[in-house]
Length: 458
Image 1 (cartoon, rainbow, N blue to C red):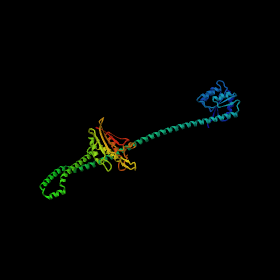
Image 2 (cartoon, rainbow, N blue to C red):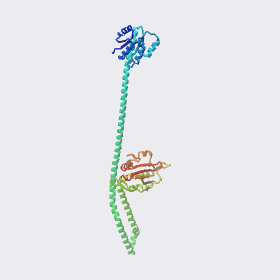
Image 3 (tube, rainbow, N blue to C red):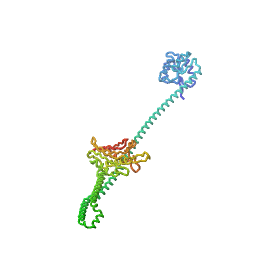
């Protein structure tokens, strides 16, 4: 255990001897000074644990000495006990105000001196211990604050890394979904194109055969009918010929047979146009940007969807209103662009077919008696762009559905009627493949309009 040091300051040598002798037996180290100046120098040089300070001294007195000790950074914490024969309460108050901790009255009582000194040394030791503990506690708090700050920074960095990683994964997932959509679209278009091209090719052969033979057949039939008329005039007296003519309704055959041939010619021409439309729709022979007539693509798509536009039961025919403007040839990928027309027109037909109303009496869903129609408008825009507007007068789209309209795999159709890929693929074809823009407008009054903007040249 460290030995405590006591500095005794008194100009009276007798008092110094008495106090030194009284305190030395307790194991404390005793220092002495005979004036205030010396005491201050000694205390600043090596700080004692306690100072016993005489009030009445030559030079600077005890009060001034205490004042200077308390003003010094090195000695202001050292406890000071005044030694005095004065009993004036004012002097005692003055000493306490200067920072003294106690008074010892002369003449000294040894036991009292020892008790007071021992008390204040104990308090001084406890104060030092408390100060050290406070210092350690302060350091520990600073260390904890530093650790918390480092932990907070680490947590922020970790959160940032998690956000960055989440964004990377989200972007990767988006790329994956787009890649899947592209694969599905490519395979779908490839299969559809091959199927359509195959069907068109197979149709072309018999159509060509029929179409080429119809003019010859018409000539042959005309010749035969001429021969029949000659025979009819030559054998007018033969009852057998008349009976057979009546039986087979020869006059009707002569009149109707040319009509049948003409009808076959019309049907053949329609088949040929359908085959041509199928080929124009798929356009497997065009894998690069090609200047095309947008109206041809629209008309081919409408011809393919013609069966869905006809009346079915109580559902009326869907009227198609074309408002085509004067458009130049547009540089595009014809097959994919026709697929966009197909997706939008098919969705419009679906919306019109599902346009139902509730019976006010029984609540049963019934077909609305409104006239379903699809309107297609094309026009030039400023900046060398064209716009195609495809609108229906169906029920429209809610705001909630509108927010997810172009999201892959999102569909409001029942299972088996939609994949949720059509519009997302269409937007990708228009915007990424053609550098255009595809938007959708739906009003509260009903109806949906898709707007396709395309640059004339890339």
